[in-house]
Image (tube, rainbow, N blue to C red; front, side, top):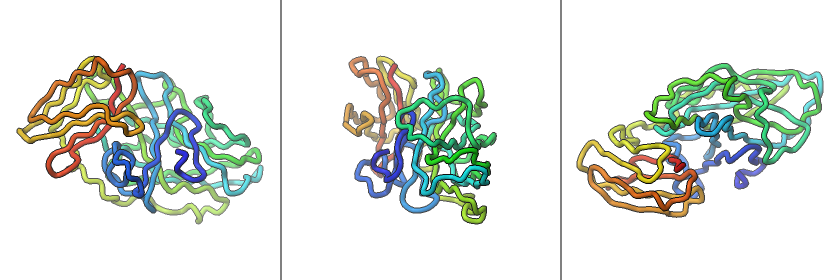
Length: 278
C-alpha cells in the first residue's frame, strides 16, 4: 500500500495493483486475483472481506481526505467494486462500506460493527464493475476515510462459499472512490464490461487442499505440459516444478502462512491465486 500515494493500510494487508508494476502478481490486468482492467486509469486496490480460518479477518484501506468534512453537511459517496476473478476467493460478503475519522489510524483494528455508510448488497459480479453509492450527514470534522468491511463474522451474510474443504475466502477490488457535497460529482456509473476473460483461467485445473499441510495436489484435465511456481507475499520464488497432467508437491518444510501460486502453459499464465499453509 505504501506505493499508492496517499493511501495506507489500516487493518492487515490490503493490496495495490498497477500496470506499471514489474512484479507479475500485482500487475494489471493480470495478477493473482485473476484478470481485470481498471474501472478507470491504470490501477486498483484489493482487500479481503472474509476468511473463515481467522475470525473477523478484514483488510481495510485508509486515506486522508482532500478537505476536512463540515459537521451537519450531507456528503455523497460513490465507488466501483468487483469480485475477484479467482477460484480461491469463493465467498462473497455483504456490509462493504465506509468509515470516517478525525484520527490517523494506521495498523488499527477497526472491526467494530460501525460504519457511516455500508451496502447490504453482496457483490457477486466478476465480469463488470458495480457502483456503490450512498450518503451520510457528517457529525464531526472528519479528516480520514476508511474502506472495507467493518462488521464481524456474526453480523455479515455470506454467499457462494463453494470451494470443497474448510477454506473460504472473500476478496473484492475497489476503484474510483469519490466523496463530495455535490451529488453530481460522484454520479458516475461503474457498470460496464471491463475486459474480464474467464477463459484465461482454466476451469479444468484443480489445486487442493486449501489450506494445505504437507502436500499440494494439482490435477489437470488434459495432457498439457505445465509449470507450477510458488512465491511468498514479497514475490520471492519458493518452489518450481514442471509436470504433465498431475503432480503431488511435498510442502512439509514450508513455514505456515499465505503464498501465491502461478501455473503456466506454453501460452502463458493459466491460473494464479493465494493458497495457505496451516
